[in-house]
Length: 385
Ligand SMILES: Nc1ncnc2c1ncn2[C@@H]1O[C@H](COP(=O)(O)OS(=O)(=O)O)[C@@H](OP(=O)(O)O)[C@H]1O
Image 1 (cartoon, rainbow, N blue to C red):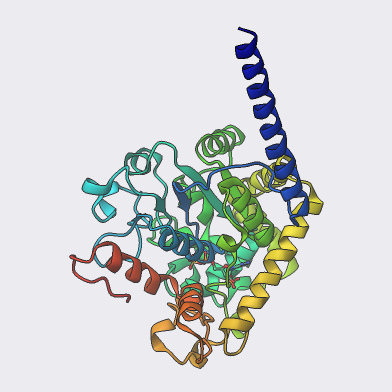
Image 2: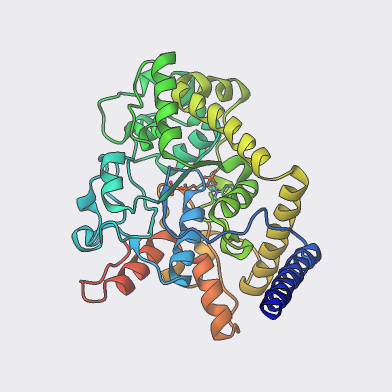
C-alpha cells in the first residue's frame, strides 16, 4: 500500500514539474516577442464584410480575397458575370453563385451589396463575424463626386463639387436612380433609407440595429489603426492585413470641398454624419478595451514597415502610378468616371514572390473573376468588364 502511495506521489510531482516547465517556457517565449498577443486564439474564418462605397473597401476586399485563397476557403461571389451582389437592390441570396448548394457553407462574403440582414444570414454560418468600414462624409462625398460624376444624375448636372454642395436640392432628386451616391451613401449601403428625415429616435434605432449585428465598424480615416484592430478581432497575422492602397484617385482629378461646404456636408448627409460620429467613438473605445495606444502604434509601425518592404520588392516604381502608365492592360483598375491609380510589377520576380505581388495589386474586378473561375471551374468563365 505504502509503495502505491509513493508511486502516486512521485507521479503527481512529475506532472507538477512538467506543468511548471510548460508555463515558464510559455512566458519566456512571449517575453522575447516584439508584440505580445493579447490572448491565445484561433483565426476566425467566417467573415462578412459590408463593402460600403468610397471608404477604402476595395483595399479590404483584396485582403479578404488573399486570405480566402491562402486558407482554401469559399467565398460568396456574385453569380454569373455580375460584378456585385445586386447593388443597389436590397441584397437577396439569389445574387450569390451556388447559394443553394453552398449556402451556410461560405466562409467569406465581401462584394458590394445593399445590406439585408434577413437574407445575408440565410447563406452565412451562424458564427459569422460581421464588420464594415465608414469614412468622414465630406471626404467620402469628394471621392464619390468624381467617381460617380456621370453615373449619379445629381452630380452629372452640377459644374463641380462645390457647385453641387452650394445648392444640392437644385440638383438632387430623390426619385432618380443612382442618386444614393450623392446623399447618405453609407446609410443606404447599410440598408436604410438615405432620404429619411432627421429624427433622433429613428437614428438611435438604426445605430442600435447596426450594433446588434456588426461586431466591428472600422474607420477609413484611421486605416492602419483599423487594420490592427481588425487583425486583433479576427486573430489573424500581421501579414494578413498588409495591403497596397486600391482605387485611389489620381492627384489631377481631386476636387476639394471648400471649408464652408465641408461643414455643410454634415447637414446634407446628416444621417451619415451621425453614423460616422457614433462609430468613430466606438472604434476608439474598442481599441481601448483591447490594447493600449503604445501597442497599437507599435503594430502600425510594423505594418507600415512591412508594407514599404513589399512595395520595394514588388513594384517597378515602388508606388502607385497613373492608369495610362500601367503596362499590363489586365491589371488596369475599373476607372469609374475618373482616373484611378494602379501598379506595375517588377519584371524579374521569382514565381513565389510574383504570385504574392500580383495578388496584392490585382484590381477588384479581375480578382473577383479569378476567384470565381477557380471556385467554379465548370461554370461559364467570369470575365471582368
Ligand atoms: N488604405 C487606405 N487608406 C485610406 N484611404 C484608402 C485606402 N485604400 C483606399 N483608400 C481610398 O478609398 C477610396 C476608394 O474606396 P473604395 O475602394 O471603397 O471605392 S469603391 O466604392 O469600391 O469604388 C479612394 O479614395 P479617394 O482617393 O479619395 O477617391 C482611395 O484612395
